[in-house]
Length: 248
Image 1 (cartoon, rainbow, N blue to C red):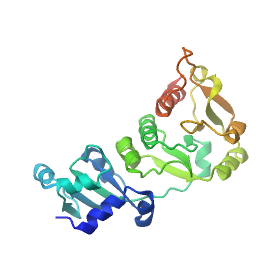
Image 2 (image 1 turned 135 degrees about the horizontal axis):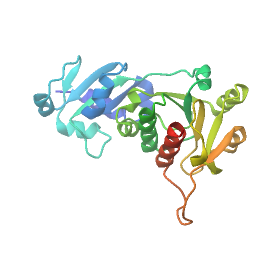
Image 3 (image 1 turned 90 degrees about the horizontal axis):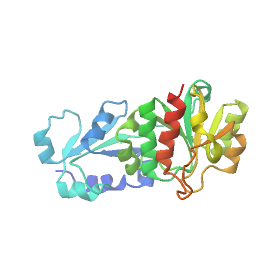
């Protein structure tokens, strides 16, 4: 069975400083783990309960048994599964030229892990391969991000950037920049987007004044009532991406 030191190590990966220290992160649950095993992420080890191993035929290196009670103690989930994988983190460098010939997404100071994971899934669904996050955004390897992405993290590249440097690039390269803003134009009147960057802001504060200033255009989802104050970020993201990438 797994040692106490490895239990401590697995538990530590719930925290950003230890994910940074070890350059590793964990994936919980077979469905998500399978996606990462089929990706180019490098597997470090797998930990599974004897019950899971008895019912499944998994052939990988570095697989160890873990008691259910120990798995519960290291899990970040309310309902832990019976298998956890540990992978090496990947770092992505921003290819400035890619901003000019494809659709990318920029997230400014997005802090909710569930929102980032859901946004990854939506990007994966619509074929958006590049997400750029401000350095102040939530860590893409946060366990809740990994879980809510449902494996899409294994296919979508995420880059973290200094916002001032990134905004300078957008202006210098004259990148077509769409910014989601409550005072923007009706997104349902927009044509299909073939290249450029779509920007979304923090869950409570929206986009910054700096980002609004460099926007080529601001867009919004018009509301039909006066009572609802706002939409969840991942919901509004899905509506806007769907409209911009599938409209005629």
